[in-house]
Structure formats: C-alpha cells, structure tokens
Length: 222
Image (cartoon, rainbow, N blue to C red):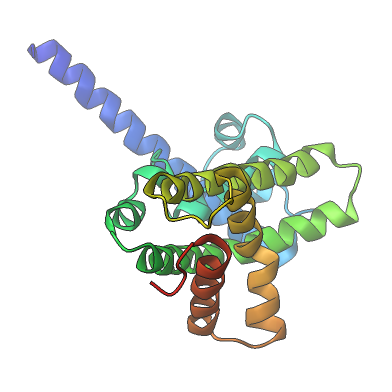
C-alpha cells in the first residue's frame, strides 16, 4: 500500500470513528430526553443542545427528522453500541451458532434476547405511547411498523439455522418457527412478566428458553 493510500485509509477510519461517536452522543441525549419527557415533548433543538452538537449536525445524522432520530435511538439501544455491525456478525450470535446442542443453543438465544429486551424496553414503550397518542404521525407509525418487520425478519435467522440442523419439530416450516420466535420475544411479553407479574429477569430468561424449546424443537428436553 502506498503512503497516499495509507493516509486516505487512516483519514477514512478517523471520519468513520468520529461519525460513530457523534451518533452515539446524539442517541444517548435523545434517549435520555425521550424517556424523561416523552417523545412528543422532546425537540430536536433540545437533543442537539444535550448532545453538544449543532442542530444541523443532528439533521445530517437523522435526515428524516424526529422519527429518524427515534429510529436511531432504538437501533443503537438494540445493538448496544453505534458500530455499523449487524447482529448476525456479533460475538454472542456466533456463540449461539457454534453451540452444538439445540436446547443449549436456545438457552443462549434466550439470554441474548433478555439482555436486548432490557435495553430496548424503555425506548419501545415511549415510542408505542407516542404512536398511540398521535395516530396521524405517519413518520412515527412507520418507524414502529418497521421495527416489527425487522424483528420478524431477524427471527428468521435462528429459525432457518435450526431448520438446517434438522432440529425443528416435524412439520414445522422455518417461516412458522420464525413467527413463534417473533411473538415469544416481544417487548410486550417482557414487560408483562417482569413488571406486571414481577418476575426477575432470570425467571423471564428461564421461561423464554423453555418456551422456545417447547415451541420449536423436535426434542425440547435434549
């Protein structure tokens, strides 16, 4: 690699790192304000001020306005960081893939899902409440609908993985298995069991692992 190419690569990496740091600051500020004040009462100017960035920088990072900002908050909260790395490429997912036993595989999946739900539940609740209060806010409605589509699509990965291993229940197509995963790992189920029923997260995780195994596996007890 020539010196010029090295400088360009270094400069590109620095810009990417700076952009990720900016997105993380914006998402952190917006998450704090939206959870504290609600989605409707949080303004873009307040988020920019809390994040320590110019309003124009905020709109550059979220060109779709406030709904795009809400999606940024959700996505970064879901991933746990601002890296442009899909869930399928993350170490915890690779550990699930590498686990040979389907029952233990789903136990690992339940642990990962519980950690994700712990992070996203407060954000998802705020967005649901705002969407219910403003049914004509098509931008926010589209964000929530998109989140659900992404959740269903994301459920296809583990379903197809189990199908390829021959671990799914007899007669259960991978598409239907994905739908069962999608429903069982919903934010609403997590809320009801940990808040209304006062379950601990450990109890929820154990329940989720057992329900996934019972709903999906030909041999749910190993």
